[in-house]
Image 1 (cartoon, rainbow, N blue to C red):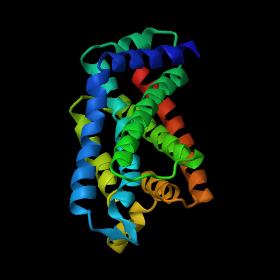
Image 2: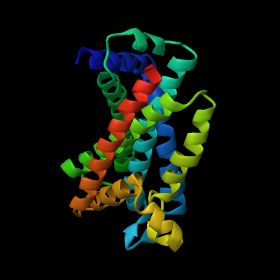
Image 3: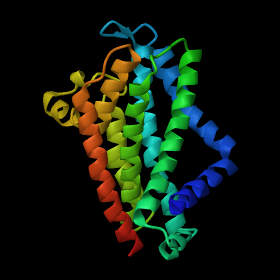
Length: 244
């Protein structure tokens, strides 16, 4: 797996060179959400008897890790359209599996870094979610899925500008409608039925249960694992397409 390590370590080296800016950028959005929605708007608000800030943190983790995992497509696009370093991968003796795993591992690393920052902010705000194996397993499945989706989108688009369309029409709606900031049950019935089956909705629902001391739904783990396998296989096809 030297190819995997080459891709992954290269991305880590790039992150290391801008570590301060990277961590600062990861901190700003969660801090604003916590201050504006959790401590501001939701200070005296409860949802199903749960203080809103306690309700918000798991959703914020799910949504932020999705965004961070998916955002690897930006780095890939820059390497494709501007730096032309993607051409090196095309010529290198690296398999599609190794390349995809290297990029996905980068997305997962970014996402878990964001998780650590949000948990620190949560503790400073007085919220102490339950953290166990299921908690991290859900985050892993969430980030694996959206990192693969990020690679697929980067491989298929023809220009950097097209990436905005995918973010605006897929990622942003999921961020706000998948139970991250309010219960999915509050949505109109026709929209609720659609939203309930999105991967981020399943992750948010189960992550919130775990964070509040409850149990996950085993069927959701099976569905999420199946979706991860499917999108990984699609990712391999997309990388092969991008390489050709």
